[in-house]
Image 1 (cartoon, rainbow, N blue to C red):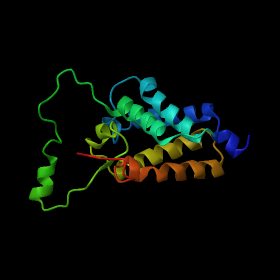
Image 2: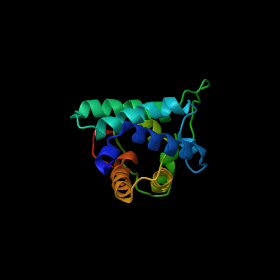
Image 3: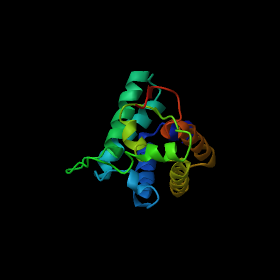
Image 4: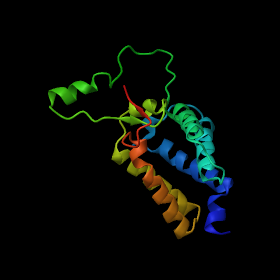
Length: 172
């Protein structure tokens, strides 16, 4: 199977997502970001998004945003039965003001991206994802050429995932 055939295989993509996600959920450095829904509910929208992006069909921007919105909602939205009036980050902006630090503007990829951004992910958290993706690709014996392509593709998503990407929607 060639690299392109391998990459277009939804079975391989699904296996990479499942294995990487399991590693992320088990990692104390990042598991706080994810909600407690079953893993299959969290990964299904991501599989839909990745398979749609990789397929040869033309994906319109609105369709991509809808798929991303489904993913961020499924993985990062909280369904607390006892909502708090004050969350741990509601007053985080005060540290920026008191400390004289510049407030970092956040650019949301879609409306549900705000669920993740409230938890303040940074580059170290994305590095954990890259570490687990790299381990998954080695574990699944993905060719070095395809592994390099996939890691490069993942790195291109860093800025957007961390709220520093192309402007779709500005956080309020």
